Image 1 (cartoon, rainbow, N blue to C red):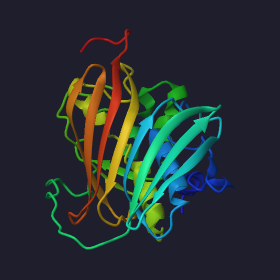
Image 2: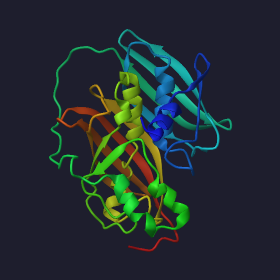
Image 3: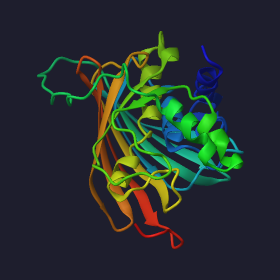
Image 4: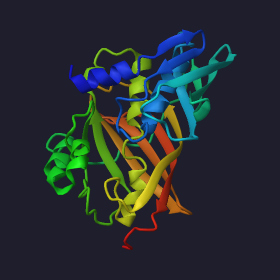
Length: 291
């Protein structure tokens, strides 16, 4: 197992403070400036799972309230809202410095039979042969100031391969459709709950970027202020993230300083395992050069 994968797994292993109270580290995630949104969602889901037995999460809904400080731990307080015969509901509040940074509601369901159908997976090139995002960033590291190169060259716990990657610094305007393959070798052997938690962490990757694509923007291009505002996720089938999954995203609407983004996550053989929706801040900077 790579050091970065172990760091992530350690990050998601919360300290138990009391029956419904947990503490997680803020550092060690995707950015040193603020806590990556997927990290807070994953830790909050881990806290909720720690109070639930024999049921898997089928949906979660979260609001990002304040940016998280990576230099400080995060306290997660779980409200055991309901334990029903088929469904269990939990509410989680993430706190730093006595203030809320995220609210999350999650519902857990006991497996039961029912009708089945799904939309087909988009027809896209398979992951084999596509260039990894890590290699793309490495190729472009020399184009950014030295103080930013660590972000381009650091190892990541997940392998990401975009179907239609763009130049990270001078991106062209293109379709909002954004297909990306993802896997995490270290997820092999993880229990179903941890697979969900890791997938929740992954689900914030690239999603807001879908609404940036038609406007010639990326997270490495300083023309916009960006942040996740809310995040919803539905789990449909078992996850085995050690295998390739296609994260198919689009952005039906951008306006009023916000972008609305959707995602569907499929196994390599086409089974829909999760759906995602998110609205994010997409505010033009006053110093941005018009495009």
